[in-house]
Amino acid sequence: MQGQRKVLTLWLIQLHRCPLCHQAITKETGWNIHHIVERVKGGSDELSNLVLLHPNCHRQLHLI
Image: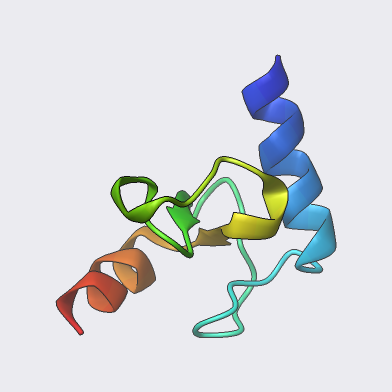
């Protein structure tokens, strides 16, 4: 339940939009949780370090 609450909170904070492409995040588009600062680099699972991204946007971000 905690994971679902986190996703819902992020979705609401982001006004239902992907911060990269600015398109709506829906059940149909899907989403990934992205750590702004990677956990291996000391990032946490706190909301302030997380964003919801479309799966394709998430892949593109990691190609940069």
